[in-house]
Image (cartoon, rainbow, N blue to C red; front, side):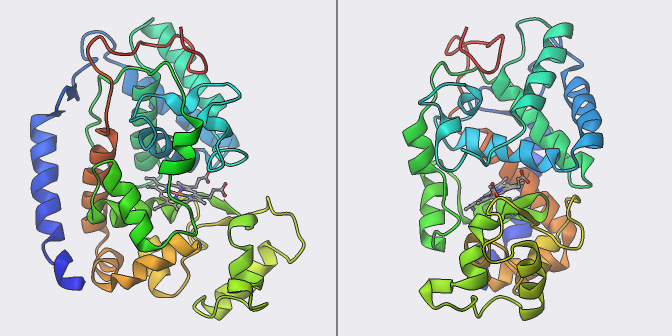
Length: 321
Ligand code: HEM
């Protein structure tokens, strides 16, 4: 498997250079709002920066919203819609996805400076980039021009978003469905370098792996002790553990060094170890990870956008107009 990734840095660099130089991809363009809302990126970034004071996790939560948006009906802001049958109520999002109130604040401030111009889908794409760069990670030119969908697809969220208990094969298939490849899977999984996980997702690994009554033998024993402290047996399933015990709020390449130490938190993280070549590469070379991550984020942001006269520019991200 490792040899398949030997070209990864070169390919990623060429792709990144192409995207950065051209600034367009399909119908999206990095200069989409240059005349209609030139300060939109600054507004988005400033609101996030302010929110970070009260909530050090908000950056992680916001990038996850963009991921969960793009995998269901494309990047069309559908995750932001309220309603009984909306994506918000789907299993991967209910009591899990967060940051909706901050998206509302961003939208209000963007509407203040450019009324009716910027879509909620683009706000999520901008918020994802700002969140990563504010946390010490890479920056990239965000491609813009998405419009908002009018419907939300609860069932789609349940089918299309990967489960933390999925095999690598299943994860790769869910990414392939939206046009992303295995390089994207590995690079994007590196977003688990910041943010938190609820104990309910890891309790089995800590106490009853595969119904054995024992912990997952592949988990680093010293790390197991720390995690059991955060997630005591019969404790609250909604307690949270840091994805990265060393730098929980920083976007760095610790995720990959953690995997090599058997400290991957979710089963879906630990399965990446079956590709030690690329995991080693990213663990040793943060620049290579950052470049691949930026390319993969642009790829993810390009999933089925609504453009032109499709969809709408919602005035409130929670409701269609
Ligand atoms: C590969 C498949 C993936 C699976 C199975 C997965 C699963 C999960 C799960 C179960 C959580 C914890 C949620 C909770 O405790 O409520 C989580 C959190 C998170 N995920 Fe993923 N994820 C995947 C890929 C991604 C991708 C592609 C990104 C972004 C590019 C991402 C970014 C995050 C972040 C930043 C958090 C922390 C959120 C917070 O603290 O609020 N994940 N993920």
